[in-house]
Image 1 (cartoon, rainbow, N blue to C red):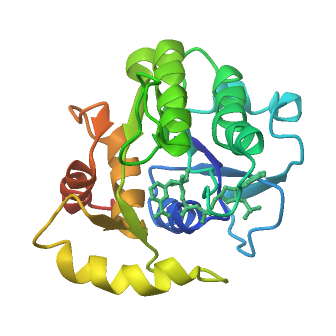
Image 2: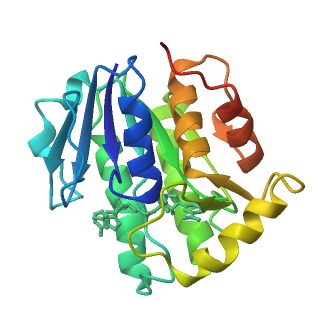
Image 3: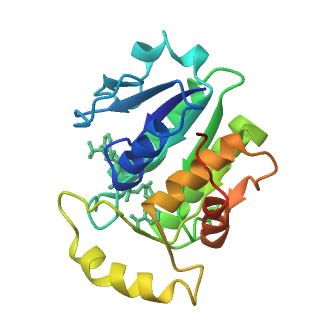
Length: 221
Ligand SMILES: NC(=O)c1ccc[n+]([C@@H]2O[C@H](COP(=O)([O-])OP(=O)(O)OC[C@H]3O[C@@H](n4cnc5c(N)ncnc54)[C@H](OP(=O)(O)O)[C@@H]3O)[C@@H](O)[C@H]2O)c1
């Protein structure tokens, strides 16, 4: 399979790249990023890109991509301007989805609480919900959506937000009792891969379903 990864420098995206490199079902992994990944491997190709609403420079690879994994996003605590938050969270994702070939699948990392009805008072829930709804209309059953709760990076971020430093250990301790609470980046990466390699997975995965899918993941030897 040929995989395209959007958001490949993030906590989820960088773990996904590590897992894809360990999974020989993916012969070619193309990462689209505004900065280098700091990882080199024979099956990995990094496409440096600056305009995330326009993907003409990928026209040589897009028709042959089997799956787009999208983990691009930003926290509302970091991007406080609602218009800019929407541009990054919605426009950047939809623009790439609209450029995909007719058979390409997509796995999209949304978030717990996303509201496709557009009625939520929370910007995060509305914008992620809008993205889910419009991606589903565009791709139908070629789309799998993940709605994780708190994500705990297995490899720590370069700059750890204070909230993550405080809440990650608490969530790690409580998640065995409350499965909807959190996932790790490895669990998300494994569930994303399962979404395209294993038949019969639901097209919308809750936090608990992500963890269940991840438990069944086995990399081919
Ligand atoms: N973290 C959580 O607890 C959590 C919980 C639920 C849902 N989610 C969702 O899960 C997804 C992945 O989360 P994460 O924690 O892995 O995020 P992250 O570590 O912040 O990574 C975000 C990715 O998006 C890219 N990005 C952000 N702003 C961009 C911009 N203006 N232009 C181009 N690229 C941009 C980043 O690129 P650069 O490295 O170049 O900035 C990075 O590759 C996000 O959509 C997030 O909303 C996260």
